[in-house]
Image (cartoon, protein in one colour):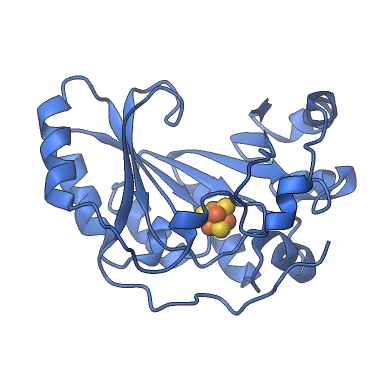
Length: 248
Ligand code: SF4
């Protein structure tokens, strides 16, 4: 299946994160923690299988005021362990560290979800101790064409490699993950990815979720692989990682 390849970033990313969604309570998004989930708008990737189409697009029609989000978190912080910052792609925003400082100042743990395209920002967050857990996508084998097909844009692979190396050498908790989308990834690709990130603490194969809204609407017609296929691959590559599993 062909995908549209755009150049990276289709709008000028503003300094301040634009909050496009707020889930007050989640027991699933931050391992072993009760967390709120904050979604930024805007992403520099256009993964054709992505179903967060509203968040991927550029500047908002509706923005959630940070003051309101903070007000809620302050009121509920006894019940919360942490906050998940996801999107969209949070590291696009150069003002992100200031927001994370506020959350950390309230005693909340911070989990960051990222596509790994901004190692400078990731490095800054790790150095300053502003993230407690990082979940990074590895979209495809680290080959230009394969990665561009999965990300929907040309990706600077040296940036993804730098992010991987920062995480693998950091003391912070992290996981790497790949959404296993038929037509984009097969068994050989997954084995290749596993070799490239061998030694990572945790690696998860995520089941592709078919919805009615995908960045490329043709992905609404694609059926996920059977779970047994993912489990078999996870079993074969489990020796490469501290922990390896299937999600979804
Ligand atoms: S799945 Fe891809 S397009 Fe969607 S938010 Fe993540 S990196 Fe961006």
